[in-house]
Length: 76
Image (cartoon, rainbow, N blue to C red; front, top):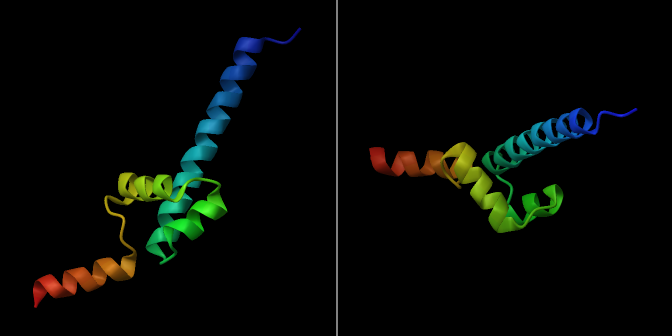
């Protein structure tokens, strides 16, 4: 007989791990320079959700290049 409580708890944990990995990939793709619409399409999420994920993980919604350009402006 199946222990549904344990099975569903395992599945939930697997889903949460997969979502965390996806969100980390979304944040990485943004740092690499991809647009929110592009990332959202690839990940199956709304582009605004992709933007929020990047802010949550990266602390910023800019690409790595945009961050570098911004830091150069503040140091000159």
